[in-house]
Length: 295
Image 1 (cartoon, rainbow, N blue to C red):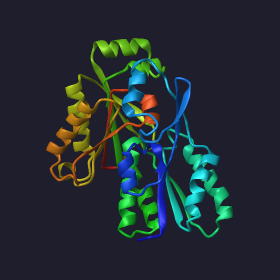
Image 2: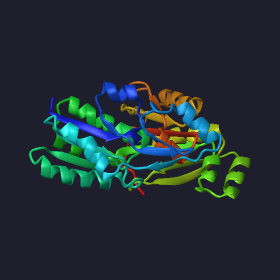
Image 3: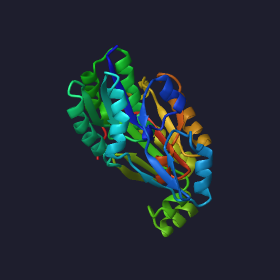
Image 4: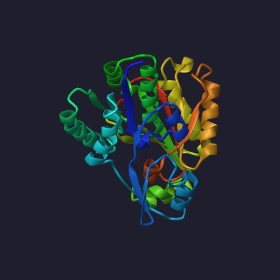
């Protein structure tokens, strides 16, 4: 097995046990809620249930990205083990953390000139970012070199599809992301916006769909259209949800029914506290490997 470490940010939105079992170190973003700062540590400091209950009660958390010094403090103990390092970053279209990681790398290269330190931009988020990291770890465990993994990521990261919808527009209204009028009309008409991530790693509204059942059918239809090999898709599929597990379960059931050759069952995860600070409760996101994303 190649002697290097793959790391990522906490915004990967995969379960803590999963990260430990796959030996993936992660660096924490932070958020502040009700005057207290917390690390985005995959539900350890505050449970996802408590976090989303606070938002439902009116809390408006704010987030902070990983800065240069925090990256240095995270990277250096790993480099001191004598191994090379590959850090896969949250999308630069959503955060400046990629640039901070690059600056940290340049500073550490002076101290560790014999170490290979690579930082790549995932152009992904939440469990779609997680699916990319998971694929990279699969390659590493199969014996791929660090550079082989970097090359694969650069060639394939835009093939990780991110489709998501929200059944609760109240947090978008409270956070100023949509107008009060849009939230009221959307609520009255039972509108569930369907969105995805474009090729710049930014979240883009695509369709306004009326009703939960219809948006669930539509999001799986997007997978049928874009998944690698169509209905014969044999890759992994991840779903993340923000305090709406039953909705996520309905999407997962339909995916498993529609795609009989999936690599394992659909993995359902919680949207973490940093991503969830921006989505609020009621969001379901579907991630799979497919054709190349466009703007």
